[in-house]
Image 1 (cartoon, rainbow, N blue to C red):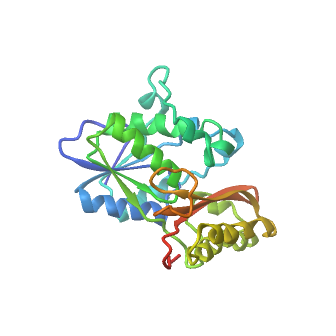
Image 2: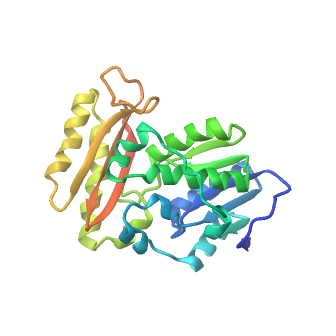
Length: 269
């Protein structure tokens, strides 16, 4: 695997996995999927300040460069690219807008977050010019917005959705999990338990009741727990064919998000 500060034009198609570093098994699963599509797999590591509304959260974001290199290589990456700010934004960056959806759910609590995400992903796409780009379903609203942006600005790139990777307890893997205390890890498991319980219900109203139990979970500060329509990202109704539950909240002052399909059949978490 080549570790690069600058990315030269590639002479063959590549699959692309953009990251902010602090790689874990979830990122490795994306890289392994990318390798199924192309022999050339580019993994970028860039902590994008534009998507952090909280400067303290940005400062606390973990950095593990040596681990990143090892995990990326083990998973099958051929290039690990670490661009500098000047590589992506040589002048004044042209910020993209996520629109009204970018101000809902996750965007309501993180002003400008999705504008920053789309801005950096668009710029990375312009520089890498991949044939495929792989994103995890854990950030489902982000995935939806990136798919929409790519369809408009980069129709030549196929966006591949990868399933959420979980610990044996059900907790979704996240770079932020390292900031949880042992007690916090146990509290955070209530998120996947709520998703699992909701996924066994037949009606949207019963799914909502299961998610609402999180409001009474000690030491968990719920931000939102909603059921949306995967196709439109509007709130689900009883006639919605593909509902999905989205949850966000804080444990130990750490913001955690998760989601799962509510297919009205048993969903394994």
